[in-house]
Length: 258
Image (cartoon, rainbow, N blue to C red; front, side, top):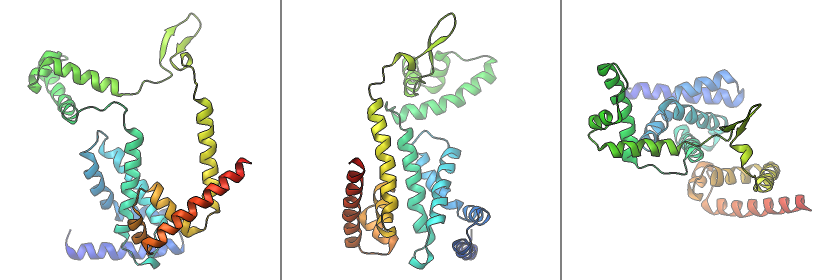
């Protein structure tokens, strides 16, 4: 893309953002997503090298962050849209990866070998006209067969087992894994869900500026300085609003417990 094309794209994007702020619509929002999809692609390529997720999945998640940025961008603040949008895109991808992060860590080298193995297996299938053996796959990857078996086992164990998975078959009905597990933490989960609802109710009662600061700091994982830059205020103001917001939330949640 030439400098002139980049300028024209930026100008068109700003015009659409002005229109969207005056009269929000799905059509305008989608146009803005298409114009700024490059921001998402750049961020996706960065994270793609650090995880085992697919490009398309990360792209969809990043686009959700872009949409949030479009809906919350305020031109009156004087910030460039790209600088404003990237933390939203990055934050959405980071939260997605945290939620998807397995409890069992697989060495990066094994993940790379596993991806290579998929191509190798397809090639051997075509050449041999049958499913290749573990020994043939290991030889093609130039690793010991024992290591290849360990890789398969690690990737298999990394995947979570569904609680709906059958563990026994009776004459009339199957027994699922979930039905055999005693849920001692149900009450804890219930309390956590109640706290989440109370927190959302509390945030809704905060003034707009304080609510935005708490969202940037605790939901988007921005530093107080980054939050100050995004909102066009001082870091001291951010610190004060964080303290005030947390104090107000604590008081509101205590009042609901009475």
